[in-house]
Length: 275
Image 1 (cartoon, rainbow, N blue to C red):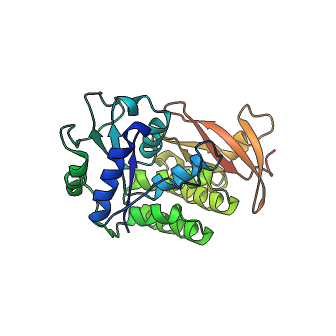
Image 2 (image 1 turned 135 degrees about the horizontal axis):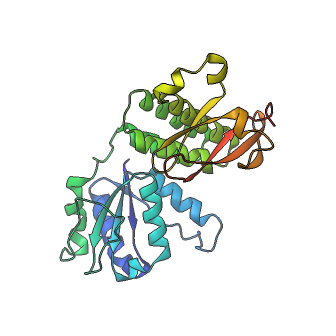
Image 3 (image 1 turned 120 degrees about the vertical axis):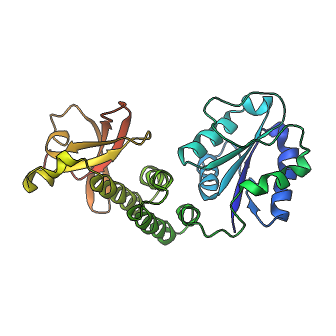
């Protein structure tokens, strides 16, 4: 069932609960923090991220208190990194952050109990079978097989050139954050394969014996840069690295600068033959 994440400051929780109840009455699932989960717990941040990952949209209750809330800011930044649909519900005259670009806002004059009905035209249908939502739900699943299925479906969507930015954002989240090395490596392999497929024309002119050393990485701004393993993997290279253990042995976690914007991208490569 399609899940909606409602983000609010603690002071706006009563309104948030009315919004959740209205959405649930319309057939959606909404996420509530478990009573057993403390904000001080190390499990709190990944639990929140997983809930946002699995959601079709984030409803942002925006107010003066929300603007001061570190957790609301964290919800917003994470949702933006995943290219989630974000719908602000204005609670007062507090201006939205400049980073929130949306064509839809729910006015402050709307009573909390009526907000859900105003949201419905902009949300995917309850029980939506949208491919991106299916991938997101599986990527947030507790079972490894489901997360690996999400990666497989994501690869298929990329070959069809469907919702590329959002699909890649899910893959990048799994590649960086999943607790299982096999899932991280599978996600990174799809990202690398997609970057290679999108390689610029000049790379296609490389000799086969040189082209096999090239790999591409995508920064969070969407730029793709290409690197030669023979250079960046060398022990004498200035590239920052860490050695991590994967399912197939040791891998080098390379911190590579984007050619376009300088953003650092982390890519795991088997550099054992080049150190």
